[in-house]
Image (cartoon, rainbow, N blue to C red; front, side, top):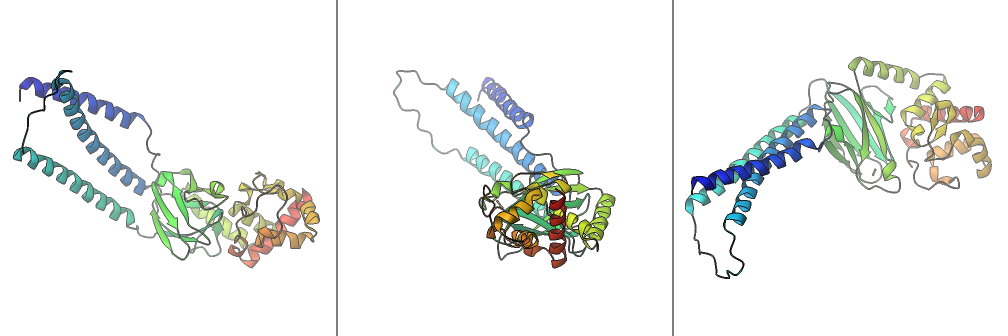
Length: 339
Ligand code: CUA
């Protein structure tokens, strides 16, 4: 090979590799990582991207060079020279991909095993998916359930995921991991949040009419703020004052994400306006307390005209303790009368 050809190939390779690298670096391909696991996964991603860019530059340079340098004349219909095997070349193009693919395999295995490992003193959170809501309970703090996933920064978390009806999928893009929730199975996901903030929790498995509204938030707090939240919530839930307990149940289960309730300061319009419960109960022809309780436990029993069926979680009522359900019913009745 002439020295001039090598220089041209090298030049082409640098140009093509530079363009590919610019595209890779200039665009925000990935969310900003917010967990140790996400950091490792993204490092692995960039490791593979660098390999891809080098291979792409090499192949594209050889192709571009050949197209220019070995172009046949327009009226040249002759066959090209017949070329047989080149042992040296074949050894290299077997050896290099073998080394690259093996190294990707080794690095991936390291990332997977480190992401699977739980730190000491990890936090367990039960995640329950149902059409069309997420709920989270903290088995180490009895009775504590929440409609938002609150996590302390810097502590390993084991999510234990279950579904009450169909297949859903838990995804927080900043944590870079997804896990399906499958009826009859318990699946797990390990996260070690390392950034404070609020991140969307999204269901990524088409699960029915309300799939697109099956969202909540993961809130990563300082360990001190998290402990304070746990203590405050536990106190509110077990409060003998049903108003305080009912308000906590309403807030924890994110009822306000779909419903308007002036007393709770929410204004969503996905579901019926809870300030109008008295009027709805009259339309349904039921006493207010029975109507409210039934609408929580068996939401399809009466559907307010103008709202779709099957959007309110069918099994939400059974996910509450009797005490929590009573408190919520009381809270809605008293808030609605004020409204
Ligand atoms: Cu649950 Cu989509």
